[in-house]
Amino acid sequence: MTKNILITGASGLIGSRLTELLYEKGHRIAHLSRTARSGKAKTFLWDVRKDQIDNESLRPTDAIIHLAGESIGGKPWTRDRKNEILKSRTHSTWLLYEELKKGNHNVKTFVSASGIGYYGPDDKDESFNEADEQGKGFLAEVVHQWEEFVDQISSLGIRVVKIRTGVVLSEKGGALKELMKPIKFYVGAPLGKGTQVLSWIHLDDLCRIYIKAVEDESMEGVYNAVSPHPVTNRDFTYSLAKAMGRPIILPPIPSVVLKLLLGEMSDLVLTGPKVSSRKIKAGGFKFEFESLDTALADLLGK
Image 1 (cartoon, one colour):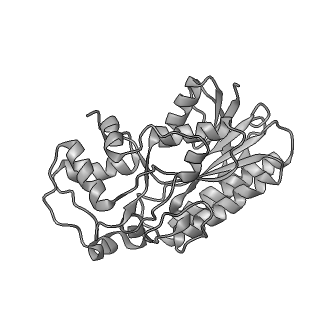
Image 2 (cartoon, rainbow, N blue to C red):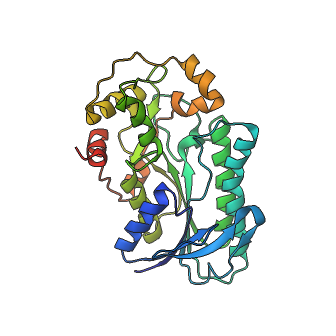
C-alpha cells in the first residue's frame, strides 16, 4: 500500500538514499527541513532551535521517519558539542511529539534512528541484543535519553520502531570515505590494538530495514541494524585496503596517540560493541550484503 511518508534529516547520507528507495517502492515522500528545497519531495519547514514546525506537515502523513541529529564525528567532543549532539536528537523528537499530541493528523507509524552506542564501549565476546541493558559512556547516555523521548510517542497510540544503527558503509560519505583516505595515500593502519569490533551495515540494507519498519506493521520496539558478520578493526582495515588495491605497510597506530589527537571522541575508533542482528532476521529481513567483502565490492565497484 502506498503511504505518505515524512522524513526528517532527509538531506543526509541515509535520508537521501532512503528517499530514492522509497520512491522506487511507490510511496509519496515529504521532507522536514530548516530550508526550502527544490525537488520531487515536498519540503515543509521546521526550526528545532526555535521550536517551530509547519503544522501542515503532519496532516497528510501516514508515517514519520526521524533521522535528524548532529553527527557524532567530525568535531571534538567539547562540552558544547556534546550538548548539541544530545539536544539535536531529544529536542527534535520532543517537538514532533508536541505536534503529534495535538491530534490533527493521520500518523500511524513513527520510525526513529538510534544507535548501537547504547551498548557502550564493552568488548565482551557475546553479541549484544536488543534486550541488553544500557552501557556506560557518553554515547550510551545520549541513546538512552533519545529513545526515552521517542517512547513518549507510543503513548499517543502510534506504532514506534527504533533502529539502533551500526557503522554505515557508503562510498558517498560517512565512515567509509574517511577510512579510505589514509589507505589511498599508503598511510592506512589498524587503530590501537585492532581487536575492537566494528558492527557495520551497508547503506542499502539499512534503508531497506527502514522501509520494512514502515510497511511491516508487526514491527515494533527496538531493532539492531547491523550486518550478521561484524569484523575487527584490523580485519576491516586489511579488507578495505585489499578492495582498494593498496597495501598496509605501517604498524598499528597506538591508542595513546589517538587519545591525544581525538580526546574522548577516540572511543569511536578504539572501542566497539559486537552487536547481533538476529532479531531483524527473525522478523523476515534478508540482508543483501552479509559479508564485508561483498559490501566493499559493491560500494567500490570491484
